Image 1: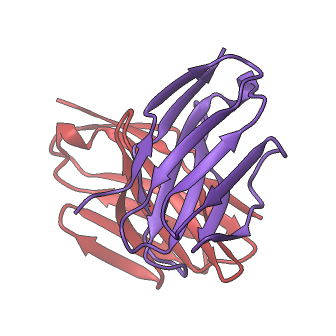
Image 2 (image 1 turned 90 degrees about the vertical axis):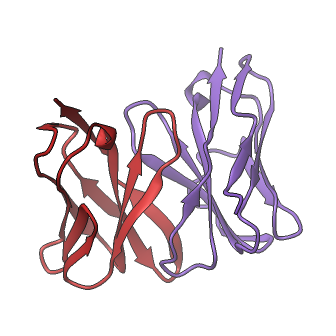
Amino acid sequence: GQNIDQPTEMTATEGAIVQINCTYQTSGFNGLFWYQQHAGEAPTFLSYNVLDGLEEKGRFSSFLSRSKGYSYLLLKELQMKDSASYLCAAYSGAGSYQLTFGKGTKLSVIP
Amino acid sequence: GAGVSQSPSNKVTEKGKDVELRCDPISGHTALYWYRQSLGQGLEFLIYFQGNSAPDKSGLPSDRFSAERTGGSVSTLTIQRTQQEDSAVYLCASSTKTGGETQYFGPGTRLLVL
């Protein structure tokens, strides 16, 4: 089985940087997804990490450490529209193609 | 291009009734997934299709839940004899193939069982 932990809520100021952490315990692991979900909307893909290290994509970066079972999503130059839930999901790989999601981190960006 | 579509967007039903939820995946996507998102909970995997077959049904919570996919495209999730605890958002996702490919989600169907 898999267990995914991430903070329930975070608050940050417009223009600032925020880091959302995710830890996972899995019986098999092949990669880590981050999704963004605005209230009442579908989750949208942000990033997918397979190898250790930091991957940068514009204002968003994602980091993975497979040995530590740890990932984070880094959001820079926060904008009000970044207020959303951020979902961490582990992909276990062959034999089980489902994603196992954490409960999500609700980020509130304040002026 | 068109994304994943789901219908209805909202469904209110009475306890004990059957409901059918529909998912239209992105054209050409062979893999299709159903998830459930209850209030305050993470997305919970229900079932996965590769083409028309469902190699992984491990997430279906009871035998009241079933799903089928026809023509390698549209999928229907059926909940029989609905219970109040079935109230949730039911999300469908599709991907080009299995194996770590990005899953693209539809807007979901909000089901309320009274």
